[in-house]
Length: 424
Length: 195
Image 1 (cartoon, each protein chain N blue to C red):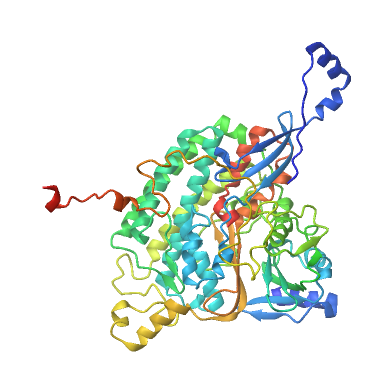
Image 2 (cartoon, each protein chain N blue to C red):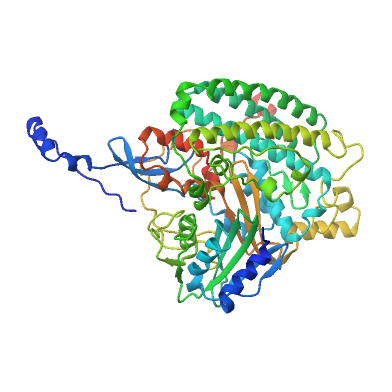
């Protein structure tokens, strides 16, 4: 990368003043290069931006990504379908369950079994996705507010996120790296009492969302720091491939849950909030409304959950097909056929047909897509992760110039990216 | 509102032999573009006339051992028609270069940089074709099939630390090849020797 620096020599004050008077237009053109990141509180991970400043105004911004590149796509080519699930936790690590679901749905699309998923599994997955959205948006808004100076909001939203982590822990056994889905289902059913815990959380979180609202939405400082800052017009948002709340804040009505419905979103009622200006304030408002919509979605799912809270009717949570999901352990040890299925699934993986699919999933950050190129067998030939944060960040060189240095923090906070997903 | 197949047929009607027959798999339509050098032209038509205003993804595939070696996959989406369409085109290893579509969809800028970084396919006319995920000066293209999973040793650009780590040599640091902390510090008392 080319970074030009300029040596500035300071002479005697009087000489400088006379020079300045003579060369004022040229002096205004003198640029300073400022390196921001990769380790900076507002870059939420390891994003580096090389800023060219004229005074305090940004004239050029060059983002430098890749500090968290782990080669997930290469790794995927060398393992079976189910083995890759834990790697999806580490993409958007603020919404691991949504990534699990997105990946499982993509592979299931390739296998052609998306419609065969048991209803209870589909509802549980939807609940997971929406809880992830709540968790991710709470963190997004909390960090955004903290970067701009409203520390209290961060404390409030983090308290609520902690409860989601507790729910995740009792459901999956892990707080962060959930690895909850399997190809053809989920790892385990809801534990006893989980539904009640979840409802309790939902009742508490709406109180805190309202609290955040009173702290920010009409707060003069907050509005001054976000309104008309970082305006992304509709056409620019589409051109740069923005997705998720960032796209919708620019007024584009595009939500994959509505446009390309998957899981049980067809049967649920929810609104898609849209912005009108596309500035940081709109992005904040869209996320706030999405939080409320997600709370309502989880409530609806819990009400409609097939089998009810404790699953008395023994609804399956995985496709009961030995060629796709692991058979019950008791049968593996006593029956020949199940033993063979178990052996084949563990050693060679689910046998996928040759072909290619793309599945886009409405993740909290935007459209998380998996393009899978399969040549048949238990491993992908090529797996491409279309990560929303990567595309959302690509707008920065266009968006930042013309803004003040301090607005960078607002803009980065409002874009709500996560580098694990951007760099893969 | 037109569906993906109708749009693919319109594309074929415009370009004739350049576009292959639309192929369906799992409800998705794919068309092959015979000449990669005309991809930008096809892109302009897709965006302008067919309404594919949203480029979702660009993916490079390495068909190692086959000719042509590189396949480029463009995932298009139309917000007005609510329809996806996939364009596929191939580039041979000797050529290794094709026109950019970043002039059509600006999001292609970073996607093409990634393909260049990971696969080594070059895009002529790209405004800023640099590596994006690996560092500047990295000598390989890691997503090629002939690149080993374990990686290859390279000279790191700048090693951040050249001094010993702050606790090195201390009682709690495991030396390479030495006993681990559990073996060095037995935590459970042995009743026969301790009493």
